[in-house]
Length: 159
Image 1 (cartoon, rainbow, N blue to C red):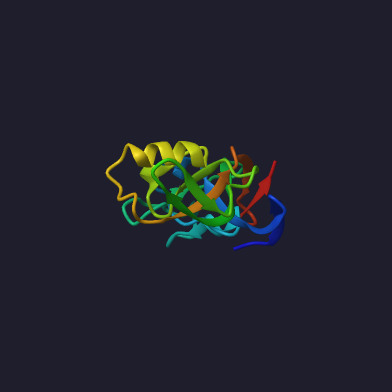
Image 2: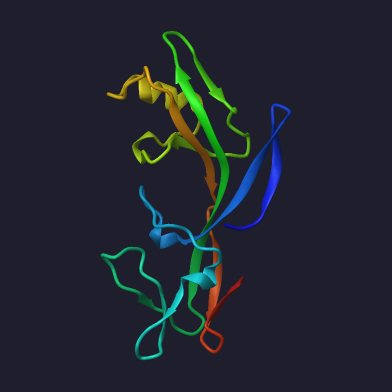
């Protein structure tokens, strides 16, 4: 993980973590673990050629060519929270930071929502056991930035 800093949510300091980079082509409902930088996705094949590392055990690496542009998305993790849903109301601690664009029940991508209110509505309509508390995660994915691959150095440069 990268640098940490603090943001404030309702006057309470909350840790914010730069969670790393992921090639835009690998974005899906379930994503592989992010890596510290775009360069961390570069691998060398047996023949010495550079490639973008595979997104899973099911796929192979993708060859990289000189000057190739690859879009990388960046994850910002705003931490976890506990959600309790009652008959007529819910509580969540800590509240969702304004900067976070997504919330979901930890390890349950089917619950992905733009906010806690929408998440609660979805959970009320789902088969989830509402007598239990839920651990949530708040996060944001960037829309992506372009990086140019340099064959001589085997590295990406932001453009």
